[in-house]
Image (cartoon, rainbow, N blue to C red):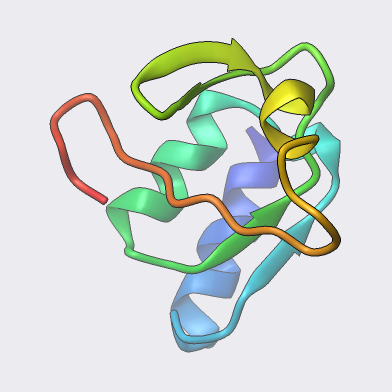
Length: 83
């Protein structure tokens, strides 16, 4: 994938401390794996049909987001338990 090549370039040339802001086109598991493997910080505008685990239960991301007022942050954890 060409996008992964571009992300690899960013990883090689910029510190993982810099936040990678990406649009909903990057809301895919391949991209999440890329960032998590490198422990890079990211903000991705998720698609409305994305399900997340919130308080131990699966729900639609818009339902989870509606519980927050204003800006919000959610931590992501892999199935293996890695944050």
